[in-house]
Amino acid sequence: MPKISSYTTTAPSLTDKLIGTDTTDNSATKNFTVSSVLELSNPNSFNLALESDTGNDSQLASAINTATTILLGGAKSGTGIALDSAGNITFSTEGKYYVQLLVNSGSINNNQSFDVKSIYFNSYKNNIEYGIAIQDSLALVTGQVPTTEGLSINIILNAAINDVLNFKFSVDDLIMGLRYQASTVGSARAAAIKIYKI
Image (cartoon, rainbow, N blue to C red):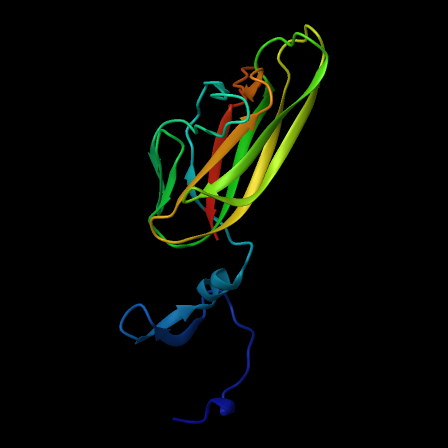
């Protein structure tokens, strides 16, 4: 067999094959496509692993300044991930994940006075705070109908097998919470989640 340096050089295509060692298959020698190698090295390559179902329930805090787990609809299984009805997400495949929590937060009931009210969010991995808390404040007017705004809370998570992730919120007034809001162009869920394997 001639030396590798004696072969001509050409621009590769995505379907071209490279030779390599598969460490997950007893170090067998195998062919890998250029496209599969690029997918491994592309930090912007995301595969949707789980998306919560549509829910239509608003959620109130259990008490002032008390962490309440955010409910994300019914139980659902994804690729290497399971969501239970209590809002806990269990990982059965280790790796790096991009997690996007979408909430519709604000006042649930009519406001009785002019004031600024806050709602706080944080993520928990195995019951330990993961990341930093986020505060969302709204100026509420006396007699104003419920006021909400949509938020997207995003984290990068390095998960091990059996890690459990959940999100919690707390409020400084029981008027605040997560609100389902129906409209003619589409409904805003109180909370929803999308998880991508990176």
